[in-house]
Image (cartoon, rainbow, N blue to C red):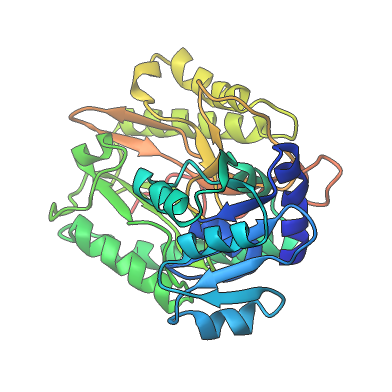
Length: 362
């Protein structure tokens, strides 16, 4: 599987005129090799010679076990070492991941191998990662199943007097108990007026009757990230709360239905944003509609009104419209789904997060 991924990258490197690529983004190294670590890099020739995986002594045993098909080199300072290895092999044009390379590290590369011609690779690996294989989708589905089950289990514990921070901790502990490696990101619990802040940090505010409570959570499983948001009502909701919830639910459904292969990401965003704007709340939807998910919580494609690109088959995305009313509260509803070709067994959209999207009144 990893060899096939590296093989798909090599023509992209050759098209740039590169003799080899130095992969330093850790999620990209994991995608191309299978090694998960905090210090690893890959030297991948455009053709011919075998790839070289570099890491330090902490991960050498894991690399030998998980990446037996790769030449392994160990060093504390892996990037200069791989630059020297490229020069030794007379690989003179080396593509590098400029979007994650610091100036300091770039200077270390040129000092280690002055003969190298360093050229930007661009986000070539991220482009490959956007379309998932079925093994990746299964891992993502597992992460989403853990997320949905954990949310469904903790709903009964939501009560007046519980703090936002306590609820976030309970949810993360429940995801771990159900098999999550860790949370996919820091859980958001935003209650009452805090719900008007899309990325509110859970505080010591106690939940109170009449609150809308937005809960944004996800489990990470085998490196893959889930993302789901639900907004619940603590006690009977006011008319304005029901109206805003219904509006966001309609916008999300419009966005989901628009997410089919070949559609511009801006058009998908516009399908949902238009529903909210027509209701007079355009200024209260302040972020993009969604993003890709996988080995990172935010991946390509990014769906927003200023974004470009089209959706393809087997692309996992989130659809997460929201309306945020300063001083009052807010509603966001988010699901992770896989965009499928219309001929696929699952249809154009395969929802991976399964918790009900109806307004829960607790």
